[in-house]
Image 1 (cartoon, helix red, strand yellow):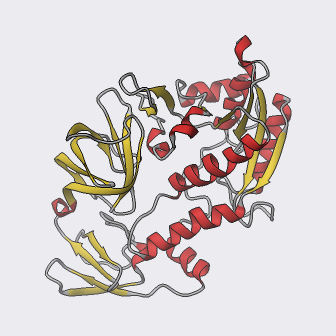
Image 2 (cartoon, one colour):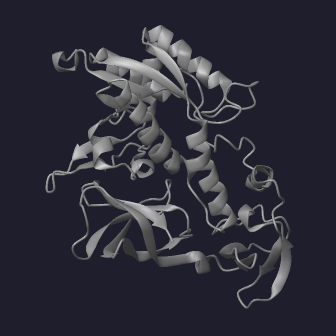
Image 3 (tube, rainbow, N blue to C red):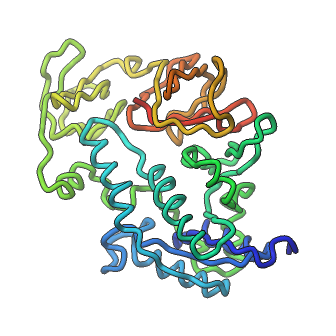
Length: 361
């Protein structure tokens, strides 16, 4: 136990999963005064159990059971309004505009680190914590707080690129140096009830992952269909709404074309989805991001060579970035597959520190 941590109060977001549960144990073991909070973020959270993820009733019960086991207080707070406004409304608007959003990144920034952290400060907490696999560091050149990518296969720094300096300064991420198996083994050793619980992989508020169905129900009107066209503009079929597609998609197009085809472009204004036969056509080298959050640096002075990720599972690729007004332009040294508007691009320096990130436009 670190004497410097005694009486330091930390609120940890408890999702009911193994990661946040073990993170809570580590913090308590280090001498912190730990408070567990579980968020109600969707309408069905306290109804009959419809699904898992981070929204189901079983997750709340699991979080409560873990907190009892660890002998720490546990509270449930209602964040349904902010979740609907900042995550679900954003998700729906982006898909209907032909873009592919990342609701988990929006939830991290607006719900967990803005709304929940504010609640934490209101009750006198010194820090806020989660069970994310990421490491917070101080950049050796600039002295700014930033996240640093690791060799950990579970590294989640990409999903947290949008955190501010103040948020990073008040955040603890106890799992940054642990592997998933390490965490599960600790949970087994502690006899936590969630030790063997599966990870949630999907969008929590769409249990069947049918975006089109969800959007039609959420907006109260059916999706407008449109045309599939080839690269020359020839109509080759009809689809049931642009929200059902993303750049690079090959399966689940809703009709058979007798050969592999890929979504190359989505034109939401006209309802057109452009398909191509050659997969090389969905490889491109340049992108632009807006809504930029700078982390290791406050801005980009000159062109900078770094490594860019265009989705969570993407292997960071060598690129050159430059700042143009409030936006950042990126040129990859080799073409990348399916650079997708609406997704986030995050850039790392050669030491793994996040330089900045933003939404691909």
